[in-house]
Image (cartoon, rainbow, N blue to C red; front, side, top):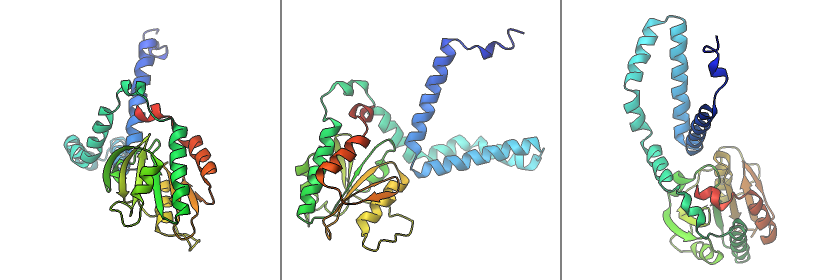
Length: 259
């Protein structure tokens, strides 16, 4: 009897294994969240559910068809998920713990640089959109722009959004304390917008914030207003001090982004 119920009393190795497997699955879901791959994964889970239902109900034809489909499923998954797998492997290659010991900008400094740039751009009536990556990766959107690897600074952000510069028309994407892309294309919101004064930048900010957990700063060239979009909501009327405080409260720690 004790041998049969022994699994109810796991030792420390079992608990460690459970924690490791849970962490791996969590990181996989974080990498897939906000991408097309998550929809494909849900479709695959649906097929698995149908397969087990077919076994329970003895639906031999459906069961046989799904078994043949699953036989080549691994190869099909490699083809279908190739972009996501490549992105995930590249992400894992950057997750080196020793990076935590290098000097980096504090998150409050990043927020202050962004807020200073937004205020200066608003004063000059120059439009801008800045997306700040959090838990959900923005790699697929960064690939639509020009790749950069530069530390966040107000001066650089002002330069990027200077009218008629090559990269001014599009979004800047920030990861940690680095600008990773400029001129990126963001998805427009799919929901009706009652405020007709919202332009393409505001709609793109809302669209990205609906699909990811990113923070998106928008500077309007028409009204010189600074806005912040998060989780499908857009709040206007920020000044530099209030924007820096809002970003500091929501920005993840630099070490978290390096891991």
